[in-house]
Image (tube, rainbow, N blue to C red):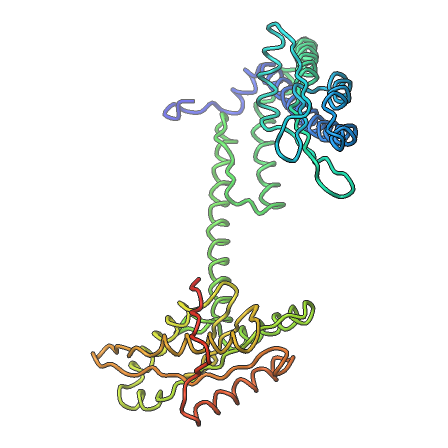
Length: 415
């Protein structure tokens, strides 16, 4: 359609409409039904092949137990010959072929069937052969497309017959159906339904060949664009608010509420599986002094750097959070016990040994005191674990010594 030329009016289109639209619609419906039927038959064929593979595994089980290849071959031949199977093979656990069968049809029809089978059944179907609970072999087979080809042939013949009958009927009915009006309006209605039911705001009504309906479709598309923009804005706002509600704005780590929720989930899972996990409670040794000397900008720079160092030490499944001020916490998921938690704490202490460079060029010590609480040894509730880890941290701070387990620390693998 040339958009530079004026579109015909509704009166002009209604005066010149032809039955070809009806013919096209019926043909499209026939093709759709045929393709749907092919998909259904293909799914049934796949399921049938799986049943054949399973039946074959039962049939040759005894033959594989006694290593009788002749019996295995005699067992699979009737099954394969009576089903839509192109190839069937039986292997033992060492991959040795015990029995095999292949259909040897010739001719142009067989060539077409093999081509269709390669598309419909790209991979062989397999089934394990078991004896007394142990796998003793495997059945592999490839499907044959004879049934599917026959279905397509019958479907095409039926569709052509339907098209012929429809063409005759449409000759008398096309002038009244006026499909050039019904079809574009139906597309707009279908698009509106999809938008309402599936929130598919990205859909658009196509250009129409009638000026009035085309104008309606373009206005409808403009409305969809506004709705799509509004939905994207709302989703972005929601994601931003959700992130702010669970994360610390300065460091990007989880906040206290989110961390306690994670600990509660870990406690529930550990209780169900009788597992372990640990909490590390971290606090700066000289943060007030840094704030007093270098200002809040210097203190914020230290907090951001410490958070980055902690992130680099987290394993998959671990969670780090800023609880407030200069206090941090780490949830060590799947911790095997206190010794592993102590090694993790020592590794973090080593990570903090390097001075932190401030924006004004000064370097300060980022030393931390670390307290440890292990589930279920030091408590089973979030409150008990956090209280124990906090007390252990203050005990460490008063003792003035960083965690130092008897064995060399094992670094926590970064994410």
